[in-house]
Length: 166
Image 1 (cartoon, helix red, strand yellow):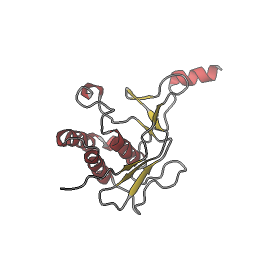
Image 2: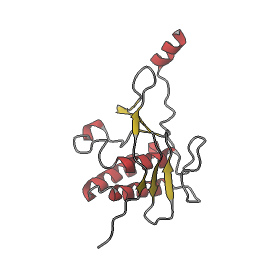
Image 3: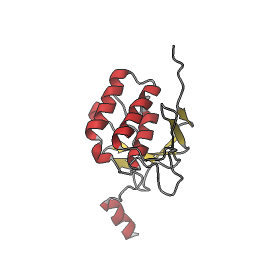
Image 4: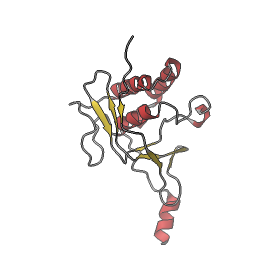
């Protein structure tokens, strides 16, 4: 019998973001900011990925029509945040002016980031069917998100007009 080890460190504490005038939303999904660092040690134990406090995530990027089976805030949230971090930094772990968020010497490529996600989903106890569906969805549709950092939200035209009127 194999002994299970939680590879995540740090308590997950999130705050719902708003942009002063309205909630911060990306494609219909609310954006959340980490209040504390979240760490994940990869399965081989050789790399520690640290998602820094302040990092912005939409949790799991599941379309609204899929929420009945896979809500964005299920047991996969910690894995999704680590995955979002690797995607936002193009696998480098370099976010804003923070220390490097990984101990591995070379950056992760997209396939490796998706592999870390799948491994982390398993570590969180996500059943094999849901784990495969979530992983397959990011393999098929995740390319456009690679290198996209949600912490830099554009100001809407309405918000910009409101600010200029002040």
